[in-house]
Each structure stands twice: as structure tokens, then as C-alpha cells.
Image 1 (cartoon, rainbow, N blue to C red):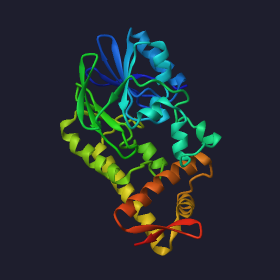
Image 2: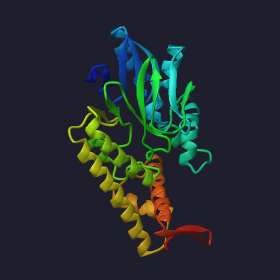
Image 3: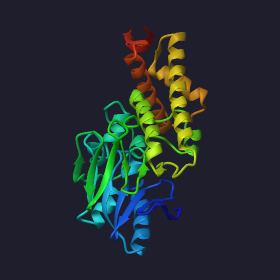
Image 4: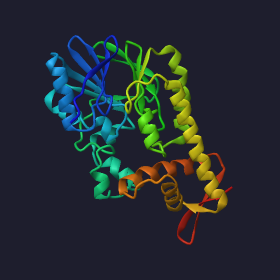
Amino acid sequence: MRKTNLISAKNNSYYFDGVFSVGVYIKNQQAILIDSGISKDVAKELDKTLSHAGIHVAAIINTHCHGDHCGGNNFFQQKYPHLKIFCTEAERPFVEDPLMGPIGLCNGAAAYEEIQKCKPITPQQGSKVTDTITPYQDQTITICGEPFEIITLPGHTRGMIGVKTPDNVLYCSDAIFGEETFRKHRILYYTFIGQALGSLKKLKSLLPSTDAVIIYHGGTSPTVATLIDDHEKRILDTKNMVLSMVQEAPCSLEEITSKVMRIHSIPDSLVAYALTKTPLQAYIAELEHEKLIKIRVTEGTCRAHIS
């Protein structure tokens, strides 16, 4: 396992420079984590780093439900019985039940085994959310006597949030991805396209009043504003690509997914297929919402048609 190092963002705000940039705010030898890593092993490594400095974990704020963000919850909850775990109401069922994520990727039905075993999709063990962040709106919550700004950033998931610490450091979760992840994944995983674009605009508006931004998949970046622009362009380009396919001929989601996977040389695996098909369905739903296409079922096949 890659050794994790605690990197200072500003004052009491840090992040780990492992594969995932788990956030940590330290005050009075207590740590409030912003997400918890992908697995028990990663959580143990993070905890070891903190414990060596005499710091114990008091709370976790889960920005959303994906396994690479809450996969360490169970370990920390078992080790620290009084641990607080915070997340939004929309994300809570998925954090608590490891099967919810894979079921969602399999159209609400029993999930394929390969999908169930994919750690980035689902936590391998559930955890109990002790504090639900509700209503889903920008607000300030107090944890261990410290104020944390909760910033709604839907799009990647329906109830995702960003977190700004008292040091004015913004942990933006998966609203954007670091340069390496952005280059690797041609179809970015957004499940609500209109909301994702809105969150990008919101994130950019926050930059002038924020001292540092931490990206979960990428840590810090000297060009966050440019990266946001790149994400917006990628989303719009993908939406236009899907629309162009439908303009050529009515297409089913399966046909669009197949074409996109071939165009971008996405490998033939169930996980890659699911992580491509799901956002493409979101693009189709967005195009329908904008009244650019209509969805019709003919002879047992559901296809997108030009309005």
C-alpha cells in the first residue's frame, strides 16, 4: 500500500496524499475527516498516521455515498465508538447499505457480482450515519465546537456536498476531478447533468473567496479555474455527441453506450460498461428535459428520437 502523508492546506486543514485525498481538520488532538478512503486497509493507514501524532478521529463528514469516499467508515466506527458520521439524507441509505450502490447501477435489480465487488462503487461494509445533514441546502454545522460550511454540489450524485473548514479551505469532493483522472476517463461520472453544470458554476464563483481547494481525486491544483472550464466543456461536448447520435438515427441507450465505448476505446468490462452507461442515461434524460429529444418504445425497444 502506498504510504500516506499528511499535507498541510492551511492552518488546521490537511489532506492525505494517498490515491484519494481524504481531508482532515485537526483541533485539540481531534480529527474531523472529510470522507474516509476506499477500504479498511486505507483507513487503518490513515489512522496509523494520525495516532502516531497523538490524534484520534472524532467525526467523519461523508461528501457522498460512493465506496471510495466512505469505505473506511466502518473501521473508524468500530475503533472509535463515539464517532460521529455526517452525510445528507439522499446519500445516507447508500452509506449504510453496501448493496444500494450496485443495485442502482443495475437498474434497481440484483447486482452482478463484478459490480458488487467494485470498491469505488460501494463500501464493502456499511456504517451507521449518526447525524443527517438536512435540509439539503448551504448551511453551517458545528462539529467538535468548530463551524463547517456545507456547500451543496449535486451532479456527481444527487445529494453530494462540499465542505469548507474554518480555515477557508474547500474540499470539493467529486464536483471536479484532478488532471490525471480527467484525462483517463473520457465520460466523466455525472448522474444529473444540469445540476453538475450548475455546481461547476457555483464552484467557480467560490474560488475568489476561498484560500485553498482540495480535489478528492487529485489533491491540490494550481489551475482549478481552468480545470472547472475543462469539465464544463467535456460535459457539453458529451451532451452534443449524444444528441448528434440521435439526430443521425433513433438510438437506444445500449446502442449509444456501445458507440461511445468504441469511440473512446473504453475496455469491455462490466464495471467500465456500468460507469459509462449510467452517465449516458443522465445525458439522455437531460436532453429530454431540454425538449431536444423524446423517448419512445417501439417493438419492445426504448429509443431516443429527435423531438
